[in-house]
Structures are given as C-alpha cells and as structure tokens.
Length: 525
Image (cartoon, rainbow, N blue to C red; front, side):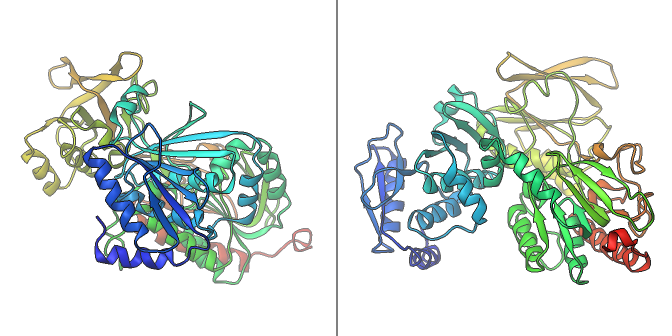
C-alpha cells in the first residue's frame, strides 16, 4: 500500500504527534475494506502514538475515524485517502495529534468561537486537485471545534450515494443535509460564510489600514511577481485577492515554467504565496474589488473599494485580476451547472465514469480534456465551432486515434438539455448544412477560453472590446498611478510565465512612477 519512501516520510511526520490518537475502522468483507485495513495498519505500525482497532459502527463501509485517544469521534473518512488526498490524511493525523496547523491565529479563534452545530459532508474524488482544500479546511474545523463534525466521502467509492444526491461535480459540500457549496473553498472562506458578522469586521479592518505605496489587486502569477519586485524596493506593498494563486489553483499540470520541470497548480500557488510572504507583503485574501477611485490630484491616493465596503488607499495600484473560464452562453448551461455541466475535467471527470460526455472547444485545453476523459468515460464527443481543431497537431493526432472519441467541427452549440435534474443531451447546428442535431449524453465540459475579470473597472480605465485592460509596453493604463498586468490585460498569450513577467514589469513601472511623482503634503502627512 505504502512504499518504503512514503513510509519513511510518514514515520517522520508522525514523530511530531504530541498526543496519542486512534484509527477506528468500520469494515465489511469487501476488497476495499481489506485495502483500507492494510493502509491503517501500516500507519499504526509507524508510531507508538497511533493505535488501530475495528470497533467502528458506521453504516458506510469501508470508513474510519481519526480520534484522540479515549475518544470515538473525530474526522471521518468514508474513503481510502490516497492520491491527492494523502496529504489531507497526513494533516488530519497531525492536527488530531496536537501538531499546530499553519493557519492564522485569528482564523483559529473564529473557528473555535463558531456558535452552532455543523455537520459537514464533503464529496471528493481522489484525482481532484481542488478537493484537498475543502477536505483539509473542514477537517481542521472538526478538530478545533467539537460542535463541527466532518465526513469526507469518496464519490468513486460511494457511487450510489453520489447518484442519489445527483452530484455531478466535486468538491461538493453539504452542511446539515443541505448543499452548502460547490467547488474549491479555503478555510477562511468557509468560516466567513458561517460567521455572518465577519464581513463588517473585515471592512472596518481594511479601511483602517495605512495607505500603501503599491497596492496590487489580484494574487495570481502577475500579482505575486509584482508584489515581490515591489517589496524588494523597500516600500509598503499590499495584495488584495479573492484567493491567492488565482486560476493557477485550478490548473492540473504545469510543465512549461522555466526552471520548474514539473509541478501542479496548487503547489505552484502555495510556493508563490510563500515567497510573497517572505518579503512581508500585506496579503488580504477573500477580498473582491468593486470599484476603482482615481486620485483627485497628481500624486494623490488611488482608492479601491472592496465588495464588503472596505476601502484601501495607495500611491499606486497594479491591476492583476486575471481571467475566468468563459461560458458558452446557451440555454441549459446555467441551469445544469454542477448537474452535468462542468469546467474542470480533472476534478469532475471521475464522476462520469462509464458515461457519455461532450467537450466544447477545440483548442489545446479542449482536446487535452477530451483525451483525458476518454480514459474514463464510455464515449467523448468534441464540439468545435471552427472548421478545424486549433490544438497542437500532436494532441489532435492523439485524439483522433482514440476509439471512443468523435469530433464535430463547424458545429455551433445551441443548447444543453436535461430532465430538470441533470443533463441528458447537447444540441448543435451544422454550420455547413444548417442541420440541427442532438447528442444524447450525461455530461458537458466547457473549454472555450477565458474572460477577463474587469467588469468592475468599466467607466474608469480603458478596456478593449474584449474587456481587457488596455496597457502600453510598460504596463501603464490611461489612469495616472494605475498599472495592469497578466491575463486581464491586452498583452497576448495568456500564460503563467508571461503573466509573471508582466507583473514584474508593472511593479518596476509603478516604482518609477513613485520616485518621479512629488507627494502632496496631505498624502505625506
């Protein structure tokens, strides 16, 4: 189950346990129960602080609970947490055993102060790279607050349960039997959603902050690079972001960032944040910008109003809000989102095992998604509007070689159909013959590119007809003291390495602006 390298690493981690813990299994005679038994016994053999027994009485079998010694409740895994969830398992073991989590002290206090009874059920898949964040967040909450209960459920292992609840996307989180959230969430986001008074407190804290020399809005590769380059100048730098890492968090494999042979999105995002924090940059997560207020006079303060009402001020601002998946905008897309319509084949693909799916989009991301899905699903149909696929030739050749894949070019998606509960088909028009056709299927993955997150800037900075922030070669916008970088701008080729370079360039331009712009007395005071 665990190779020698993993055993050695896990033994070292378990050496950090500060108190004994129990692994309590609920098993039956199935092969999966035998597999879980082997895993838990191996873990228990690596530390005298860990005991194992099979006294569990849970109806989900196989499953197990990680509990403190002398207790029978704790984090509950209805899963064999390997793959992307092995880290979640290790952290649950450490946290239950008293090892402190790497979470801000005020967040820990918020969790402990939650007043209510919360029963979380988190459905995940072992191949989902977005799921561990939710699994780890809700596990930590259960460990810190006895009124929080968390059960982590592998959708592939409990397929009947997934079907009964009509779960078509992971991570899917239920709270007290009702849908709480779909998709990736951090512990801060979950706590903020439960603590309804936190928004007003956060707004007040933001508004009380002293003005920054450089304020960066957005925490993706462009924002992170801008923060590092600006902070190295010895000036006061802040980053306000909805989630640090941005869309990189949703990227499975990164193999083209120079000097990094291979990594994944979440790991890359975590490394970026670690480097930014090294320079003591003020990072403000869970913050969505709502309005840009230009300086009233040359050299004055630019202000950014956040969605929670808080206002941040700075002598210069760098916009790096990135982009998001583009919707196909046909009837049925919004109605069946997370009920058959999905955007992440790596996360949600396993839920469609043995089923028929379509991928909309013939670029690299669409063809890669179709290839990946073909290894899981019964059949995949690729729909492309243009007269040929735009993906790299090697990818197109691979897709065409697959026996359970079909390709339709000159095909305009017209609707996504369903029975009111879930998707059952896709309609498209043949752009050559004009004929309307319908494909029966259970899932649709949309892979048609990106749309910039710039709606909040309309009427303030110049935008292109595609909604991108118009910038010059140095990252200047048409507003004094305001710069922009990354996927939200008119710079071509939306790539991580290009966004990072743009962020560095925008930071250098912002610093050049600061040293050349006199500071009004009111600002200096």
